[in-house]
Length: 438
Image (cartoon, rainbow, N blue to C red; front, side, top):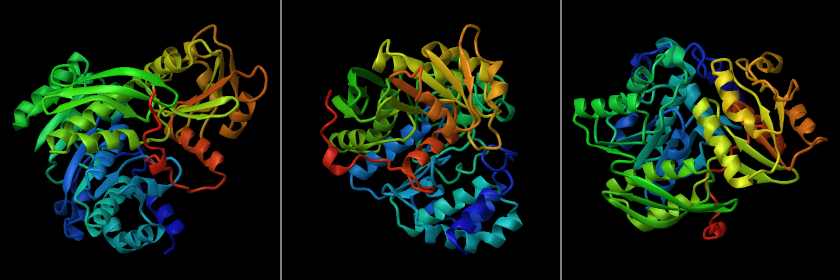
């Protein structure tokens, strides 16, 4: 089996990315049983939430790696290459390893009725065991309670900011959504971002019910942004085991201070020292999360896809670009709250271009037009490439920001790479460390 055939087979499985999601852990347990339970051969840090869980996972993995540990990182969805989902010490899984894993698991996948996410999770955990990692950082795909990553007994669980998202699967109230996400808290200790009151009560109750110590941003943990520019930002992080004054982050956006805080507090509780935490924070990159690529016009990519993410993006655009005119290129998927998203983000635009990614779940731009707030001028294009081309002609603005879905961001990055299936880097090159002072 070739790599291309393997990826096609996995992505074609029922219960693809968010589509036809089928709750239950019996399928992943069957897969792991057939593999000899690889999840028992390393420590697990489990990360759930609505916004920021990918960034927190990346921070966590790079900090642990900076401390000399061998680290597996499993995230989703991918932007440009399936291999991005599964990394050891920041290196994507090889094409041969993907092909071999799918070939070996084929019969079990069929017998268990595994979903795409079940299969990719099993491949990741088996790869980590074969690569003899010390710890694996696992980002939840959807929810938490019935997510395929909810396996083993984590040494730490991290819950990022909870917001309305995937209501069809997780519930219509923040309390219901929080209950699904907080279910990852089951052993070790837990760390949580500051939450809306309804969600905070659920997270606290869950930790108490299972006897897991909980550290919470705002009560136990604190982050202060000292300065920021397009080259990076400086933050001070504090907590019971954490005193990191004036640390450098390469990732932009005030919201990244919270993500850095959650990862750093977890690392400190695991016994990681200040030098490794500092180095990990500065080295970490997470593509498509307020990623400023520069150029003329300056291109900004952000995977914001819900109202909370849209508000954070709008704030970041104001902080970094002030009153500079911004063209927004937006494409959303069908399960998103388009009116609320566009209400939050559209006021940041002097020009709004609606488009769609190639995903079968993408909303046609003409259908999105009705969700745009009154008074905002709108243009529509059928493809991402055409949207970028349109954004580059008059009335052109100095900044173009692409947002609305990670599938959209992935297409932009693939276009810029000039080739398909090129994994995105998640760490700064070694020679650039120390150059993000602001």
